[in-house]
Length: 639
Ligand SMILES: *[C@@H]1O[C@H](CO)[C@@H](O)[C@H](O)[C@H]1NC(C)=O
Ligand SMILES: *[C@@H]1O[C@H](CO)[C@@H](O)[C@H](O)[C@H]1NC(C)=O
Ligand SMILES: *[C@@H]1O[C@H](CO)[C@@H](O)[C@H](O)[C@H]1NC(C)=O
Ligand SMILES: *[C@@H]1O[C@H](CO)[C@@H](O)[C@H](O)[C@H]1NC(C)=O
Image (spheres, rainbow, N blue to C red):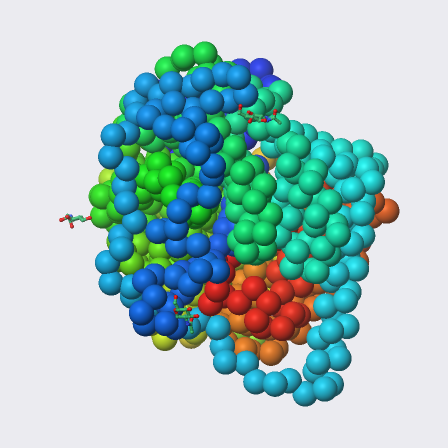
């Protein structure tokens, strides 16, 4: 990958390695950028909670059943609704000034005219959920038993967090200690609010809301604030819970505004693109800020749901304005990238250029794409911009990113891979790698199919979902690895299983990637092949497993859940249950649940980390697929 020399590597690095010495950082970063997929774990794909988070659990502005009502029913706050902030709060935040604690922040590059919501024709958003029929008694009993098992799992980890890591960002699930990873503002607590509500744990929810109301977003021990992570975990967490509870806990919106005010300062740059690693102290002291010359598109391109929702709820358009400017830049540049239709994994946000040659819908780009159909819903379908961008992107992804892997029994599945453009020839090569992070695509394409009336895409969505189910079921642990390689079939071939071709691919790949001096030498290809297959526990179809961990991620169950709600295909519930049983079995600890080091073995080792998305997303989707379909209906909420 080619990368401008001027990139500020420090701005780009995941926080957790930022304390390494500069030299190590530079080397590591180059390696990192060259082999993004191997390291995808360092940047989590943002997604939200049903409430909002990655998916702001935001009420989609569904078409009013009431032709005379203007835009939205009262229970769903509309873009027109009055700000709920009291006057004194409002006046503190006007005209390019903001207040943090006792300090005043004066914008150096204030915006004069804020972007507005398009109040044009209230387009009807199509109904997306399947028309579910009454289930029979036997199915119901089975479903409710599964639901109960998911709830028990959630309660176990929540109690562990409560007893051992209350008000900390994360529970450390092996030793019962805690970790601060996202500003120290109780990330797990805030992120999980919506799940508590959805699972009917009202007392726990209220206790958590009370605790959250005490969080001080006026300060942090961190030098820099990760704008994206803070947006999806905190801002999304508050907004989702606020919407799910129909505004009955006003403090949730108040806290959302506090986070929003903090984050909005990061947009005070000459071109109004946010400084994604926000040096908040310097900024408050009047330092100049500028957008990064090297940033992941997901970090800058997936703030839209949370910021838009914040404007809808407060009536203060500056948040929407901030993200609409970003969308306009992505829109303008969509046909100017090296692979028109898609935005590359990295961009220069200071010059607003997109010259990178690597394209993926996975790590570091993911939620940029994911947010498009959801933003369309959140805006009530009133702008054709987002639909246009989505359709253009999906057409390019179908041609260059999604691939059919060669697997035994010729199973017809799709995986979301990666495209690399050769700068001199302009040829586009599809790399057949897969990532757990890429599994959200099944849900996204399904949602897009229903929203934008592309029936033919629903089938493609199911194949993407099936690719992830297949990867789960192929592993000895029953859980999909974080990053792996496969062999892509030619789009026009029948993709029959060919063991020789698979072995050749394994061997070629091993020769290309192994570190000669660090690994045993072999005199024959066959010996190297046997060694590689045995050492990496490669099951037929897998050419390499780059990262065999499972990090408690949600993307696969998320898509299984969404596709189930879209189509009512009941086999998806059985697949979800198998996933759940295996994950629960391999990750449960005395205190909560732990990520695991190697899904390719029957008994993986646990590692001392439980990110907030385990409670906030993964278990939420497992719960929702076994709930009644009207619990957090996809026709009412964006999640
Ligand atoms: C239609 O709008 C009126 C006035 O806003 C409201 O009272 C009524 O409940 C709405 N009807 C439905 C079916 O939403
Ligand atoms: C943070 O600052 C705001 C604005 O001055 C203030 O209202 C709020 O009480 C502060 N929060 C805490 C927890 O100190
Ligand atoms: C690229 O898209 C813009 C609209 O976003 C359009 O105005 C322009 O003509 C397009 N350019 C090309 C080369 O297709
Ligand atoms: C490689 O594995 C195959 C099948 O398990 C076996 O028949 C063959 O003898 C092995 N070859 C070497 C060189 O170990």
